Amino acid sequence: MAKLRLALTLIAAAAALAAIPAQSGASGKGLQRCGGSVRAAVVPCPKAKRIAGEYAKTRTRRLQGFICTSKKGGARIKARCVLDRKRVLFSFRA
Image (cartoon, rainbow, N blue to C red):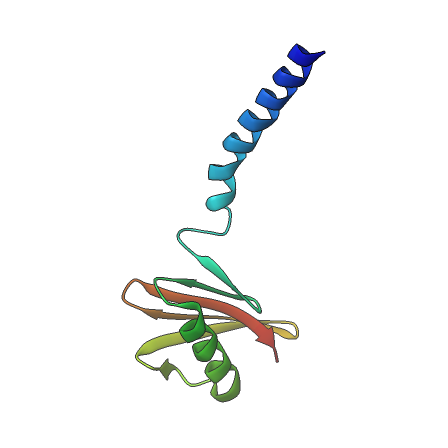
């Protein structure tokens, strides 16, 4: 019984370790989830959220040095703001 329990524990640990790299790349290429449908790369989450909020209010093409574009799909707007390697991706309701 002890050998069976040990074998099951080792199998579960190996499966957990194998799943860790798969989950880390699941959100995109270097993008971190900031909450509120905001994802960012090389930008701190608080700044990414400020940029997303400001764009949702003003919809201007340039914000804090970032160049922003958006696409409307139904009632949802998907936006992207880029500055060099820094990226902020977010969506909001129109």
